[in-house]
Length: 176
Ligand SMILES: [Zn+2]
Image 1 (cartoon, protein in one colour):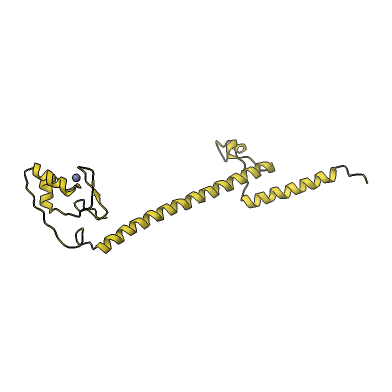
Image 2 (cartoon, rainbow, N blue to C red; image 1 turned 60 degrees about the horizontal axis):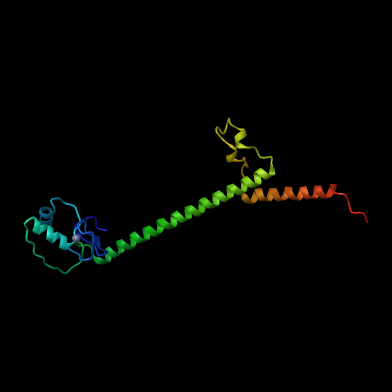
């Protein structure tokens, strides 16, 4: 939106004096604004500006005009700016959501790798290699190398099958 605080844009600006939103687009010439406000910046509704001017001894008159507002920015362009802003907000939200989901996937992958890696029992613990991983504790888990959730789960399943076969081989056979 326009950065010139003297222009109220169509979405409605908030008056810094009464706190109300005003939708009446209006503009005061620079010299009038500075006489009444005592400075360049600020945002006032017409009523408060009128009241403040009266307090300072200025009688204002108001005139109306036809045209695009604020300044010479066409309404269509203003709407486009608003839409671009909204699209930007939506884009940023979508980006944040993608990042959240990505982080969730990474976290889940790591958790599965740790559960499977620790169950397999032969992966080295980071805490046991203080030289390369200073300060590592049990919470840092085991090093599963290039494994991802799918591959380490497959490895765990393979070992499980082998273990079952071994158990079967050593079990006393049923007498027929
Ligand atoms: Zn006001």
